[in-house]
Amino acid sequence: MMNLYSGTTDPFSHRCRIVLYEKGMDFQVIDVDLYNKPEDIAVINPYNRVPVLVDRDLVLYEANIINEYIDERFPHPQLMPPDPIMRARARQLLHTFEMELFSHIAILEENQKAAEKSRLHVRDQLVQLAGIFSKQKFLLGDEFSMLDVAIAPLLWRLDHYGIELPKVAAPMSKYAERIFSRQGFIDALTPSEKVMRR
Ligand SMILES: N[C@@H](CCC(=O)N[C@@H](CS)C(=O)NCC(=O)O)C(=O)O
Image (cartoon, rainbow, N blue to C red; front, side, top):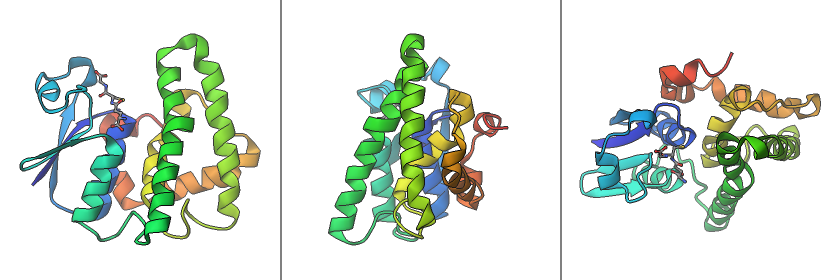
């Protein structure tokens, strides 16, 4: 059985939990309190961070790497596109999300002075992305994919991060609700995450 070491409020661990629950497979989530981190995390991940996936002899860290492994081991429903060109584009976009969204989330959590600039940057990026949803239901088309998994923990935490979407981004808010109503998403929320959003 796969074991996921997962931070109870960590957006990256949240991504992996979403994939595990969307796949409906057998796994165990081991809750990690980031304020009181057990020493064994540093033993299995040289960067001493969560999430970490342990599947027998295989130990993986980095949320997107873990998620691609789970997607390949349990291909139904498939979350990465089957076509190599589309899959490469999806990976490129996953990288763009890290650079343009999640690196700014790290700044706003750690550096109060730079926080407002990062909030505005994330808000503007989400406003730009909102245009996509006039044509399709999810980021890569009409099917839920790994791109939706990657952005969902951020959308869930917008209030928590103090980011307010303007009216022009209403399609983004509707898209977020579409994700939040999925059973896999609901099941993946920890009690601490459930109270993050009013
Ligand atoms: N790029 C990594 C980011 C993981 C990460 O930054 N994890 C943080 C929590 S948000 C962590 O475990 N930090 C260690 C600590 O807070 O002690 C991933 O995608 O998994």
